[in-house]
Each structure stands twice: as C-alpha cells, then as structure tokens.
Image 1 (cartoon, rainbow, N blue to C red):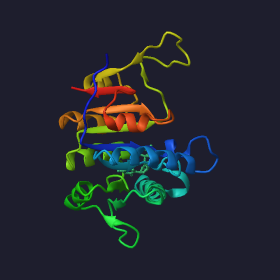
Image 2: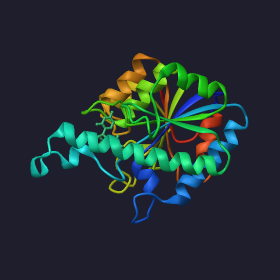
Image 3: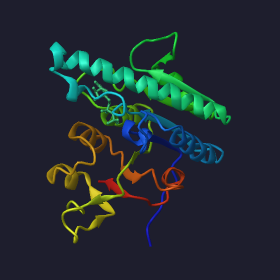
Image 4: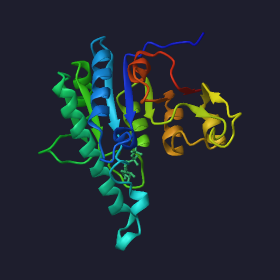
Length: 240
Ligand code: UDP
C-alpha cells in the first residue's frame, strides 16, 4: 500500500501550459475553475495552500531571446509578466467561488497586486487565504519551478506539488519505448544524475538542500489536485 502524508502547508506549482489545456486560447477557464474547486475543497479542511503560477502558455523567455534584438533578460521580464496575467486570472476564478486569495508579485506592481512580503504571505495563509506568487523569482534566467522551490523554503511549506500535463515520470519515453516503467518514487539524486526532465536542476537542488519533497502529478485527472494536497499518493514522489 502506498504511504500517505498529512500536509498542513503546501506549495502548488501550476505551469502555464497546464492552464492552457487543449484550448487555442492561452487560458482555459474550465481549467482555472477546476483548480479553484479542488483548492476550495482542501482549504475547507484547514490545509494552507500557496500557489506559484508559470507563464509558458503566454511567453517563454528562452524561446524568444535573440529575436529582433531581444536580449535574454528582457525576454525573461516579459515571461515574468506573463505569470502575473495567469495569477490575476486564477485569483479572479478562485474569488468567484468564495476563496479569499491574494496575489504577491516578486517585483512591484502595487496597483495590481501586493509585493512579495514573506511575513505577510505567511499571515495570509494562517488566515486561510490562498496566496498566489507571481513573477517567478523576480530574476531573469530563473524559472517558476525555481520560484516554487524558493518560496516553499521561505514560507516553510512541507512539499512542492508540481501539477503538470504529463501522467507520471517514466524511466524512458513511453511513446518510443512500450516497456517504459512508471516511477512512483525517486530520490533527488535519481532526478539529477539521470537528468530526468521533471524539474530543472536549480529547482530540484534547492528542494534537496532544504529537504522539501516534490510530488509531480497530472492535473488533468479530476481529483488529482485535491488528492495531492491532501497527501494521497498521486504521480511521482521525489525525496531524500
Ligand atoms: N521567468 C524568469 N524568472 C523567474 C521565473 C520565470 O525570468 O524566476 C520567466 C522566463 O522567461 C520563463 C517565463 O518567465 O520562461 C515563464 O515561466 P516558466 O517558463 O517557468 O513557466 P511554466 O513553464 O511553468 O509555464
């Protein structure tokens, strides 16, 4: 039988790609609503939820750097702004079903959202509010996975729950190798030594250094987000 956990404070990472679903638009409102409903079901149990949103559905700095004179740092600023768009959308959806939600940005845009203030973020969580961290780490050359690792360490979240479009982690590409095995448990070392593309190296080593486990799971399966937050085993568990 699979062990389960009782998390009290979690950090949910939602990639931009996941928000897009199979829509032509950048954001599928059915997906933001599904996320909101599942998060609502666990905040009612008293579990504190912080969210880091990605921006890849709108803009990915690394793919645009070099185009028409756009340097990587400027491209990454655009990418970070994309995460703010997603965050505001997700906040609106959450509040529409009665979940009090605050967005905090890694760089100031105080007319739009609060600036990131660690102690204030923790206070919001203690009051049962969901906090969405936007604009990644605020630094070019980083990713929102690294932002998830960083914020989880800062706010003492017990786990990073990485919601993706893929099912679980395989030991090989299941499209090419029919014998590819699903991996339910991995060590940090497995991920770094085999260069498994579940999370970038900066993010995974930051989690390792701070002993924060990572659960990578498919958010397209209904119920998976709330299961992951409630500590039921879904997807792949990465730990010490
Ligand atoms: N980004 C950045 N610094 C950060 C986080 C994100 O510069 O700390 C930029 C980067 O250009 C990235 C984009 O924002 O491509 C969107 O973030 P990410 O690719 O991590 O989103 P996801 O893959 O989760 O959708």
